[in-house]
Length: 341
Ligand SMILES: [Zn+2]
Ligand SMILES: [Zn+2]
Image 1 (tube, helix red, strand yellow):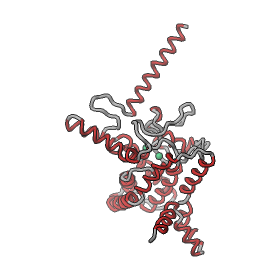
Image 2: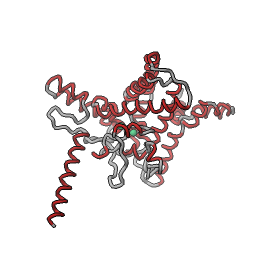
Image 3: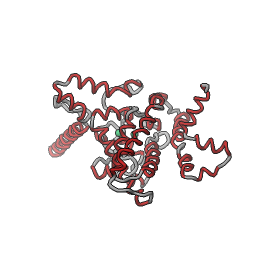
Image 4: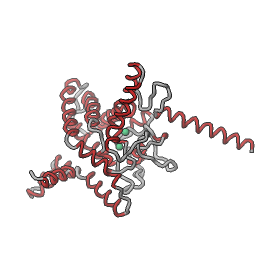
């Protein structure tokens, strides 16, 4: 295979149009009406939206190569290894846990609703732990590193994150009776929506999607999730149905008066691939190395990011408490000034 063929195949695979190209070549369009055919028509949606986003950014002269460069490198790095480990992990979990499931479901609309609610629950668990357990944050932080929101962010993931996510999500769903074909169908919808919620401000300035903002998780909610503003940190862990954020009290609306700052809280270089990809692992290793005693070393691995053996925590929770104290002091001062006036 020469270099042009390799590049051609890569582009076709990225765009998700392999099946459509085959259909056009053969002239037999009937397969587009099958279940797989419909999926193959939906697959190119996100890659094409990404291209539209870049074109709009170019037209409005807002295109900055830095916004896309690192996610592109990460996509290339993950292209082979991550996808295969992830598929293998899903197959492994189904094989391991299917015989232990609490009951068997069928592919009907009511079991589909049940399956989706369970899927969102498993997604919440994976995502919540990825933010609250520091060693798992090392796998997830690459996705939070970009300081601008656009569709390329959807491809920015550390290569071990997908197998970790799929281990948690597949195991929970299979054990709670979601059958494998339905799980794949849900994963497909979730993957498409999960990519769409990263749509950039060049395409969609106000991402609240009208009344949907009250009903489902919109790109606006996911922008809040990507914010490093203390008030927004560690909120909106769900993907499409935000029921579990509402149940567990992690749901947050985007506030007009509090503009989102994207990225993570430690000083980093978002233009440096190594910092984006391995930076958190480096700092964790450093903390573990310097921590006194085996207990503290272990705590650095499992406690939330920002936990410190000295007690000077900088976790999201501690930072929120400090912010709240500051606001309370400010309010008291304002009341006093008003009373004295
Ligand atoms: Zn996250
Ligand atoms: Zn995201």
